[in-house]
Image (cartoon, rainbow, N blue to C red; front, side, top):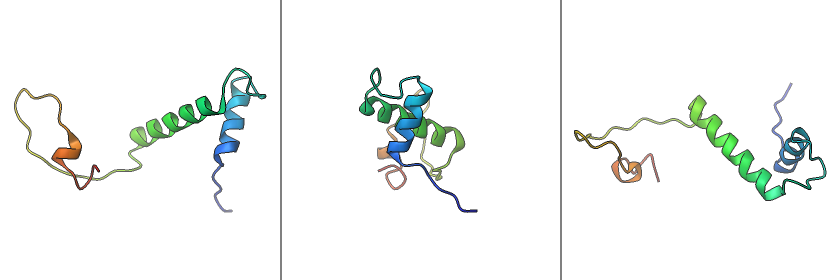
Length: 76
């Protein structure tokens, strides 16, 4: 059994069907694409699908860091 991935058009159609809008009257294809991309990004973040390790020196009382500057090889 081989694995098959759905196309963007298929995913949009399936999402529109789940939203009870199969003819895409209330939700435009562009909106559905944005929601699908966000869902995939969230899934990747939760599952650490794209993961890599890097290290940099932290500073006391500095809560935020610009990762593309701190670890440019992992964050382009």
